[in-house]
Image 1 (cartoon, one colour):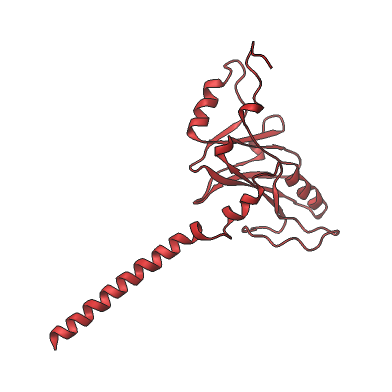
Image 2: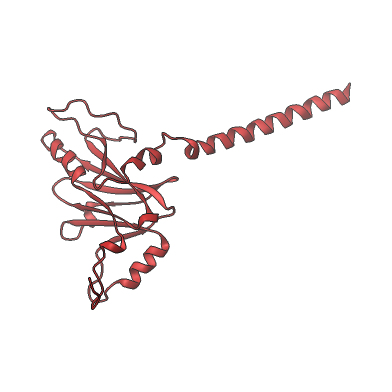
Length: 203
């Protein structure tokens, strides 16, 4: 009788351990397997030169903003995303600053890994460049010592991700401008074809 009880207890314990392992593995696999997570939904914007709208601030002309699929901490903040694939080249996000507060946050599968606000702008321009380690080293090697780059360069932990653009409308009258400011941000891929030819090189 005691042997039967021990076997039953052992089988129950093994079952609980296996169930726990399966549960943990399923939870950890959700971001990778899901087609509706933020990274997957943002990929639709990889071919766009301006942010994909995620949330527009409600205005008198448009009182019903589209459904947001990123956390919106403040209904007065317009939000857009630019996805990137560094296999195509470094990702450049360029914004002109103005009276409205603007921020850029770079995200990977594991969450945000860098954020910057318009306070880091130089002469009203903010250029965030996301690169792989090899692309970063190459960019440093090509820098002109007499004219240092004003780009904010960030080495991404992964080859694919997205940048979230947020613009705050502090007043109701600023809401249309906030929506427009998100769309005014430029999202482009820096490729060798975009770089100026070296001195003496033929076009």
